[in-house]
Every structure is written in C-alpha cells, then in structure tokens.
Image 1: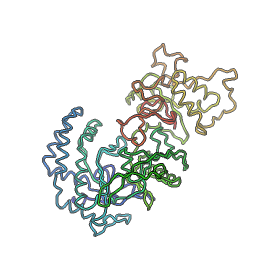
Image 2: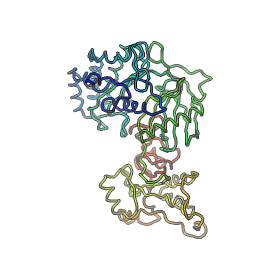
Image 3: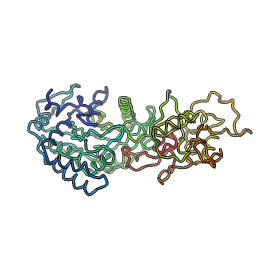
Image 4: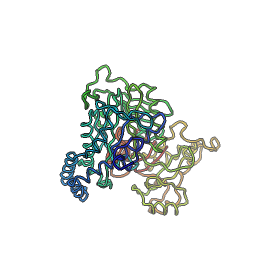
Length: 514
C-alpha cells in the first residue's frame, strides 16, 4: 500500500499514530461484538503533515508558537489566529482531495464488517477532529477541537476537514497543550462518519463522575443530537445503574434540542411543552445502554466516558475515552471491597510524594502501606468491618477530622459493602465496659511526626486532620479533583463535592472506599 493510500483509511484499520485518539478508539469499538459504530473513514495525520509541509507559512508560524511562553496570552492569541487562518486557506493537493471525496461517491465501498462506507454525494456526514494527543489516559482534550455535524456534499466535507485541522491552533487548544506539556508536536487526523439522526443522545460514564464510585454507571441523556449536552446548552436527564438495575433517576426540564437540517448543518429547536419533563429513556433502554458501557469498559480496561446516540436502529457509539479524573485505586489481589485512609494527610503532606519518598516510607514503616496516585494508604477494612471496633474507629478518627468520621460512617451504613469479620459475635462491644479499640496504626509514622503530636488522642495515624488546605469547595473528604457532572475530563474543570463522601478519594486521597 503506497503513501497516498494511507492518507485515507477505514476506521477499523486505524492506530493512534496515524489516526489520533478518537479515530483509534472508534476502530477498536468497531471490532467489539454488539457495539454499533457509524461507518466511515479517517483522513490520517499523514494528510495533515503533507499539507503543512507544502505550506511554508504554516511551518514558520508553528516554529514561533513553539517558542512562546504559555503565560503570554497576547502572543498566543495573535500567532494562533494566524496559524488557524493559514491552515483554513491551505490548498488540499488534488489527488488527496480526490481520495477523500471518492469515499463519498456513489461507487460504493464496504468495510470489514460489510457496512457501506461510500454512500453518495447527497449523504450527510459527521466530520470530527482526532488529534494524536487526545483521549489518552492522562488527558482527554475534551472540547479543544472542532466537530461539524450534518455535512452534505464533497466540497463541504473538504472544507470541514480543513477547519478540523485548523482547530488544532485555536488559542484555547494551543494554551492547553503548552500548559499540559503536550507541546505543539501534535498532529491532527479527521474522522468522517455517516451521520446519525438520533431521537436521543448523551454521555455515559462507567464510573459515577460525582462520587467516583466504579460500581455505578451514570448516564446523561437529552433529546436530539448530543451536541446540546456536550456544549452545556441544556440540562440532561441523569440515570444511575448498578448491577443491571436502575437505582436513581433525575428528570430534567428540557426546553431545547439540536436537530439536523435537511440542507446541511444543525439548528436549535424548542421542545414541545408536553414533552419537556418526559424521561428521555425507558428503564429497558437505560439498562441496555449501561450493559454496552460495561462491555466497552472491559475492552479498554479502564472506566470510560462514552458518547452515544439512539435512533430507530438502536444505540450507536460515537466516541469513548478514559475518564481521566478518577483517583487510582490501590492494586489488590482479590475482588473484595477495601477501605483505605491516607498516611500523608496525617502529616499535613497533602501533595503527592516522589517515587523515592514513597519507597523510603514503605521500607522504614513496619505497617503495610500501599501507594496510589503518589500517596500512601493503610487498609482499615478489617477494623472497620468488625462490630466491636468499626463504630469506635469512625468515632475516634472523627475527633481529629469530622469529615473523615462522616465518610467512615457512610461506609458503615452501606449494606453488604464491608466483609463479615471471622470473629463476629465473639468480641465484647465497646459499650459493655471495655475500652474502645485503638485505630489501626500506620507503624513507623510517629517517627516522622513532631513530638507534641504523638499523643493518641490528638489524631489517629494515617488519617488527615482536616481537608486539604486552600480549597474552600472541599467540604467533604475524598472529593478533591472530581469533576462536575457532564464534564469529568481535564484538571481545569470545576470541583464539585461528592454526595456520598465515602465513595472515592480525589487527588487529595483522604479516603478511598471502593
């Protein structure tokens, strides 16, 4: 296969290097049994590189942008605007243009699954950016690059491809890459897919984006195209599913929807008054969609942020990416539930530790510690699970930090979450004359503590005394770093407190219960 042919490939033939994160994930999705992905193709990064190489003005502007200070907003604004204009005005080589438009000619072509990828010049397409740095496990780049829906005709498709290339150089995208260390050595591919005209669309998270609970699937749904939800124009219905059952639903008042226009493009439409407070999905549809999400999560090996749409043919998946904001769970060798408390927060060490620091603590402390997210934790599950010590543990730790006490009590209130201790029923309860059992001690931590804080009634080892300093929004433990519903994607999004404090730890890592 020659170089020109690799400038345009089927989605099921893509990899991240030549197709970017979005297209590569769509290619993997298309190979999962039971997952429907709209057919289409990818204009690879090689096509983008060719256009840049043949346009000296673009190369010169990129060189200047690469040397710009990330805090010099005026320089970034000026240079990025010039780079974007240069890309939008660039000529697409004739043979490359023919390769792209040939995919939407009436001749007809099928992919490996036998689906039609050439549909005629009057067909509608979704043209979407797919940069090499986006949709990774570290950063999603959500909303940084452009998408064009309901694009009709070869000329319009070529123009949309150019504009997707140019969106690599918006002021916001350039600033984001410079600040995240991605730099400007990022290439852009473009996904061109058959347009779906859905009656409903939205976002599915295979871990609750508010609490971080990995056992709960959370679904945001709205009428019409999903662009209304992704862009934050409308409120969404929110459904929660656990173990194949709907455990929660919030029906929003939905006044607006985005729909495709027959001539191309989209328009905003008011929803009829008698439909505004109707649920978008039935219970059967909710459970079915959640099952698709779990199948996708299993394939990718991590919690996923999935964009979906629903038409007369059922659910179609148009994007999946890792949820980049979930605090990592310490690795264990079993499938049991575990509750961890932070060692570093007791020492007022709220920042992540270096690998060397983690190693020193683990080697010098007799207690078994596990690390996750650059922080050390002690497993308090056995003590918390025991009726003789669990309530006393929550009470004692709550004296030094009421937020941690509240979180541990929330865990105790969860039915069937904690394992049944082997000695249940044999221990004497604390209210029958015995002294409450001390909390599990992170042995060795006293060596790192000032002497005046070594008394047991000051604070329990391995647990924070207070929420991480400097963030007035963090009014419950274990929520730092979690995202506002609907945008659980990159670190600059707003923090929103968890509704169930014991569900999961954020970047502060006060408490992890999962």
